[in-house]
Image (cartoon, rainbow, N blue to C red; front, side, top):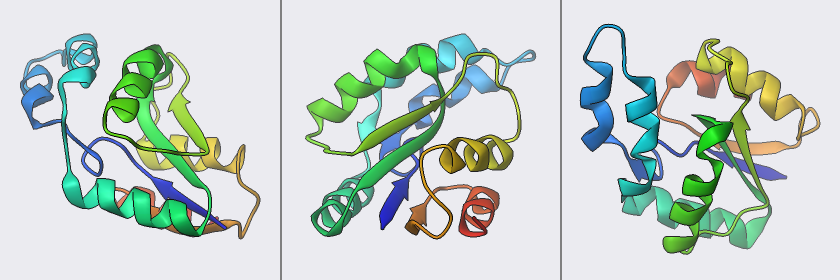
Amino acid sequence: MIAVFDIDGVLADATHRQHHLQSRPKDWQGFFRAVGDDGPIARGIDLVREAGREGPVVLLSGRPESTRAATEEWLARHGLEYEGLVLRPEGDYRAAAVAKAELLSAVAAPGEVSAVWDDDASVVAALGAL
């Protein structure tokens, strides 16, 4: 069984980047350029470690693929171990629930997910239905 975790808002505190999304149009490049500066969310980090003792952990994020190096560095810096890191393809602007459900179905068989941690209730509902 696989435990699935979101990164932003669950493991990483992205509040310092939110100002990039207050402008019109939103500055998504600036928002994602600062992922390496996120602080850890202790409870989420602890949950990943607990889940990892019981089975594989997959990190499923709405971050674009272009953030992979910075994301992997951040995860390593905070001592997180995981089976897979799934990021959005570049140019994928679909709703998080739709995109994450499709991305997860590519790496996990139906019924293989034991738990989902995400700060978006619509994502939890969509992934729980898989």
